[in-house]
Image (cartoon, rainbow, N blue to C red; front, side, top):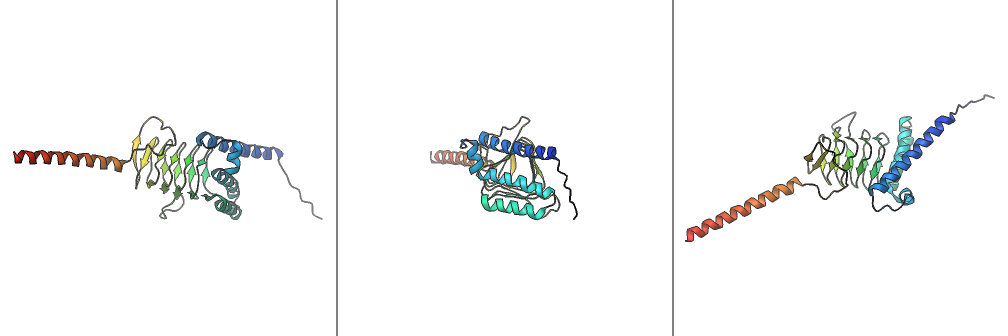
Amino acid sequence: MTEIKVNIDLDDIKQELKKVKDEIKTDIRVIRERDPAATSDLEVALLYSGFHAVLAYRLSHKLYEKKKFFAARMVSQGARFLTGIEIHPGAKIGRGLFIDHGSAVVIGETTEIGDNCTLYQGVTLGGTGKHVGKRHPTLGDNVMVGSGAKVLGPFKVGSNSKIAANAVVLEEIPDNSTAVGIPARVVKRGSKKVECDLDQIHIPDPVAQELCKLTMRIEKLEKELAEEKNKSKE
């Protein structure tokens, strides 16, 4: 009978378990910090679909790194079925990702996400279909992507930047910037860090600003025209 020897390094196992435990604690903590609706760690752990999706991703990513691609996709697709959030196991995600609400979020295979980022429902970090290899975006640290926004292509969104709700981002966004519109353009860029206050409302809308300018111009012209008519009557 052939004897099979299995070498198990208990220290490595302990280190891996500690790492997983720390990641879970971090994920719960950031949700408590950023979501005022979260009342307890237990609520987050049991009831937050974004937390469940990230937890499943971390397992599927470890399988993916070990080239167990089928098992990795089984885990990620199971999480998609349960949470409505699709994260490809090949994506690289840092610590403290918060997916708020989460329904219909899609994160592509070559996406890279830095630390302490926030994604709202309906966000797509996808490709355009024109690229091979690196096809999906890279988010720096402390990036907020508003609900319904689409970030498409293999470029970087700089650290401490915000993407407004429903924006479509097709090119690189510098650090400390705010991008809005379709296609998105930068409307704010400063040397100081942009605080991630999760405010999707009070972001300047360049289209609304231009309409306001046009409205004021029309009102001025109408006033001048009325004055000219009054002069001609006199």
